[in-house]
Length: 297
Image (cartoon, rainbow, N blue to C red; front, side, top):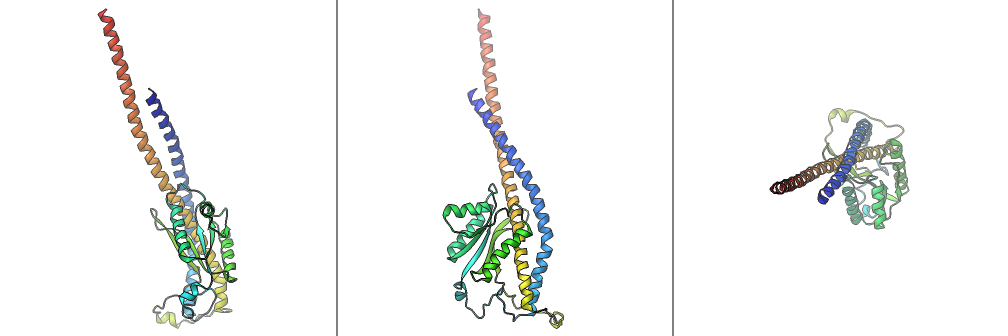
């Protein structure tokens, strides 16, 4: 019965692990619902800001500003060597979430190899550990952010990046995060926050063209006010979206782990029952043989 005892010990170990994975699934499910609610409440504000900026650029196409690209006057090759680009990388604080962290870090790694000299800003303990292990320099780690995304933390991150952008230390701001496509799928994505790309030339209706819109005190100063709020709003939205994607990935991973544990328990239970049955049959056979032997005497 030594083998049966080993199987029983293994079953108990798997059952304990199964309880943990199932509990983590339930916790992630609860956190996901909260993140989705936050994202839902944030989107109207973010899209209103985005539309306001697009409308301003559409009605003031000749505006010149530090927050805007100036592709016509400066070739792309010259723009790429004007200064360093800044990358804000969003990872989780812990693993056990499938390929969630790996996808973001792979995208960041490719960008590091492609862009040459760049400045990296890290959100999330997993990203910080990844950079530390490989000896990659990173400028600032915004701690205690990813588990509780808030507009306050997003504004701190935005102001840090914008300050370096205004001082000319970085000439572009990009964000590498995880975008949640639907309830089943998410994707690591890179988005350029600054400089803003001018809207493509599109046909404008006569009604819109005929409207006279004035910006006080000036379009440039309005843009000065809108862009920091836009950057902070986008960062907050991306933090919440990454957080929701993390919980979704962890739910999927824990559900798969719980299912695997169920399959293993089923197989081990059958194996254990067969061994017990064989052992009982052997004992009955020995008792019957002994009884027959005594009967012959």
